[in-house]
Length: 513
Image (cartoon, rainbow, N blue to C red):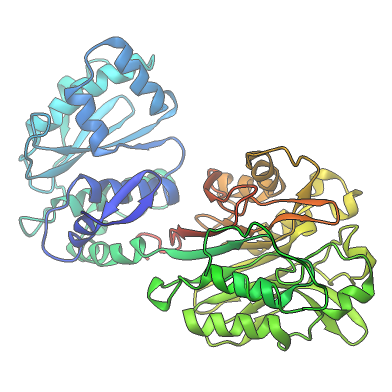
């Protein structure tokens, strides 16, 4: 069975597709579509359409009546597209073989054809232009009436130097026109951009684009005060909930053992980049007195929570983040350990906005924390539960304190540990919670949409817990959100213990850099 290595915005890449980038090979539909989708997500403005080769084939061979054209035009949001980039092959029948790629451009009521093997796909481009004109009409656009009869064959298109790089030239051309449309290439000619060197560079960069940031998020029912047990679970009963567990506040290592059982299936071969655990992951959250909390407090870089994180970081060779109760002199903080693959404590964010439960015992941190991770080359903002809310629930909702902090730091990732709770214990779907978190990050979403952010995307990674403590119900919904769209990349349920494994594209590897 073919092994899938990537699922990126509905583009499914298999090992055989990825292998095409490694040598002197002709690219197939999947390989071409992957990079077109990558450009859509990272470079192209919203009025640019980069068409999936499979959709082009459908347009040519399967659209037969007005309703089908209208449905397709609506799905492509064709009414708002100012630039349409259409890959063309010399295949003239559904499911037939093809041997050459070229690029058809539609803008300003005109079709232009760019062929890296001049003249080869001249007739194929016209076969695509004709149904595309009908598609424009189905969208209520008549700016291209008759344009398919006058497809311009652009002269002096950069020519491929071999028999297999036509697909790569299509991708470089698409990249160029996306950037030029965005105002980035006003002084760079196509001939200077689409060079054999750039084609070779892009082919060599593809494996790096496909290699994604790998995240593992632990979601489980932490038992109050049972540190050792909770740790054990985070490492072998992966995905299996324990029906009944008896709590003894005198056993501080109870939860450590439990979490051990959830992550035991992970190994260094999985190449995990980040392992995340929730707020106060091994101690539980709803304590009744400061004295009880003090029993499970640790000095930063010491104690059972740190040693558990250190052991897992070294075993998996990854970053580990975990919420814990920090002790500094007489003060207690609701904090998060950030441990490097070498087992070093590299960052120690403290909760800044305290929830009513925290106020019983915790001292507030002195501000939100953002840190640049040198080995991942990522800027990371850290938040702990209440940090994402308005300060003390008294600040204006529109202040968006944490979201504004993320924008100011242009973070690539937000790592959010929480013990998020509400009173809707009958709710089985997580979407209300996910929508609220996204809303609280709306400054990031807005900045990404306007181009102010200067980074291609920001991903929100959340580890929450489930279960209940002293009448407080925890909602689960651990997740990864892509804030550019925004979109849910993956999420856990509201009541299930899970080891959520997610792959996030490295959208920082921008084309041409």
